[in-house]
Image (cartoon, rainbow, N blue to C red):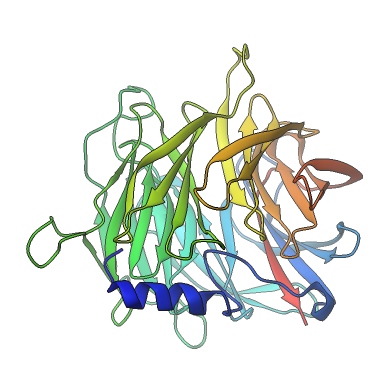
Length: 399
């Protein structure tokens, strides 16, 4: 990445000791009495009212319903601010799409709307925060643009500081890749990466945390010897979400795993010695040999210990488990677990890494799986909770 090599190593070293990093979630289960869990849903043509809250017991993996935390339209992605005081949601509603800020009452689990702004694009489907927690980053799917909003001390959203439409060559799928479709966005050190399903690219933007601006990475030149160029996927891959990780054995190497929604694959990338993500090292299928039904890959996540990667299939309705080679990032399939429902659009691993919670959108439930810490395999606990059209889940630790 475009930072001096000594600084790059120092940042990675220090990152191992930070409580909040994007490479790895470090949690001390003994220090956390419990969690709140917030679930985003689709409300259009469903029985859902908006965002739902649950209490989560980290020792058993059980969810206890609290009820509707906030009534809001189509909150298809929710995220808890690093401070634990606020929650942000995208309201996916075509040209009327919004971004909402809520204050969290940790005692009751209820959410209070602080303010709501137009998303400045159509159908936002993902949001995340910059490393300072001062900005929220939005990916607008249908319009193919990404937007940055500042976050005030009171948690309210301010006027956008950046609004950029993705550009590049379209993929070959005429139905799904007729234009740019930003589907995921994340700040990774000094850069912002965007997975664009329509362009078969993971784009890189330079991010200025002082003023919240984005700009495309410069072309290679005398003063920019190793700028991160767009990461190119095979035609028709349709990158949806990305998982980023660091190797514990080689602090100079990082791994990027790109989930292909359209061809149901995971593509692995590693960094070069200069710190840039280079060519793909591996492309591995998510479906068993001989499967010929409809499938759309949905979610991807790395286990907190960095040893396993999980990815979900909608259609085949399963979660695939891979082991991660700790030196070079290579994936090896370990298991293919039936999800116990239909359309696992999203899943989340609890911060301690003991349980995986899968949201089955078309079955209106969340199913809990126990994670084997040695093999990474999933075993249903027998617990599930009902919630209409669940499509996103976020944890809030309660100290």
